[in-house]
Amino acid sequence: MGDRSRSSAGSPADEALQSRDGLRIETRASVVTLTLDRPDSLNALTVPLKVALLEALLAIARSSAIRVVVLTGAGRAFCAGQDLAERAEPDAPPLEVELRERYNPMVRALRDLPQPVIAAINGVAAGAGASLALASDLRIASVDARFVLAFGRIGLVPDSGLTWLLPRLVGAARAAELALVGDPLGANEALAIGLVGRVVPAAELLPAAHALADRIAEGPPRALAMTKRLLEAGWSTDLDEALEAEAAAQGLAGASADHAEGLAAFREKRPPRFSGE
Ligand code: T3D
Figure (tube, rainbow, N blue to C red):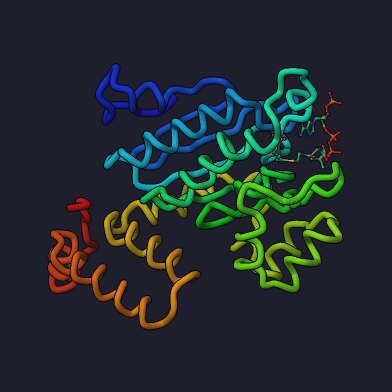
């Protein structure tokens, strides 16, 4: 288990960042790795796991010590979506309720995180597992990864943001092909259509994800958070609104200590040390 020295012991945020209920949480420097850790069921999502993931994401959002999040799976899968054994239990909540109360807040929390999220997709990403990968900001896949939009196979519609995210990432035509035909999509095919940013050998996945996380963690946190918000807003605003939003954000970034540090580092020909102020 990694360094927790930055959290104040006993605080609610600290408790939310403890491993539990199939979610492993490891912090190294300013990078937190969230590992979906139910390998016997391909990291399928149970209610306790979803609650743990949501609470961890909300705690991370409040943390100024954490600068980047890596999301991955234990064993041979990234995540097989909803746990179908739990779904078959007689007291399972209605699908609609489960989406509104747990899946949707989880996706919203991922999208709203100020910190960049890297999905390190180590194996199959099916159903809502694919949605979690798509809701991340960056995706690195192992050659063993594959996307399975499994919803149609069990008579369901894509959910957890997939119908919104997929066409924006790969275009309407490819999204329709993937969602309506439902053939598995391998890592290199996903790379070819831009669904993942890079593909690496399996043994290199976590080192590559952490190397990328470390690089991003050196960036200016507030400017990166605003960049995330601008990119997201750009999907649903017109050019004039985007120009205005950029100007407002640049006003804030330009007044930050990190901007002054960036300029000083440029003048002094040294790497910047961004404080997040
Ligand atoms: O609340 C709600 O229900 C609404 C929300 C819905 C969101 C969703 O995610 S709906 C989609 C749910 N997910 C699926 O339909 C995927 C089901 N799984 C599969 O189609 C396949 O397992 C995979 C394509 C993911 C992988 O296939 P494969 O051949 O590599 O592995 P496998 O042999 O099928 O599975 C290995 C084990 O994992 C197996 O257990 P066993 O027989 O060794 O004891 C299998 O039952 C288990 N497993 C796989 N997926 C799930 C699962 N157990 C529970 N839930 C799963 N989703």
